[in-house]
Image (cartoon, rainbow, N blue to C red; front, side):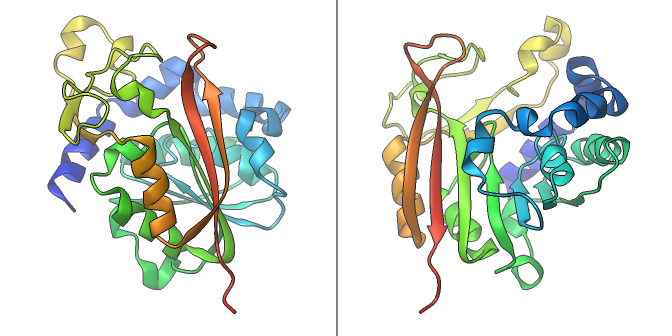
Length: 256
């Protein structure tokens, strides 16, 4: 595991299980909400899935299972890859409470076993802002390409790169002092650190982050062998006049 991954693992295992309970309820409580409207729980991402039944989905950095469990309820076979044991605990309890199941692989995403998981998935899906946890966008995208079956699709939704220089989502995160095109590595708080009391917040482990420009992300996708199919920008929930997120749809070409 890379040094920065070890650092990020410590951060993501800092009281994560208790945090999810405080923010979204116990697994049993959250499961009831998901079962009422699993498509609704996918929010805007539902529009990017053509179907659910029987498809194999790799949910990258799938955290506590908030999106993986709705997909599983809808009939997808979901494997979550995430670095946090605390996240795994919540996600598996959530799936059980919802009457479904997940495969959950804990470890460094960049060390996913391609002998086991390569050429396996119909969809690789990521959301909620994960790209900055990986310091080499090309290495990351090559792995995503390798996980997919030929003809498979990547749904990559993330924070808009404007967040490098503006706190448009009110995350209270460190900005890139070198400007939008800076390649600096930042030590950042967890996105949910702002929910803790100051004395606890000061003790929380930091994450090692590399924030990318839009061209770095798009070129990382294309140069890893993907065919770009769609690019959408989404307004910030804090200010609809500014972009807050984006979604890229890209496919691995079928072999001729």
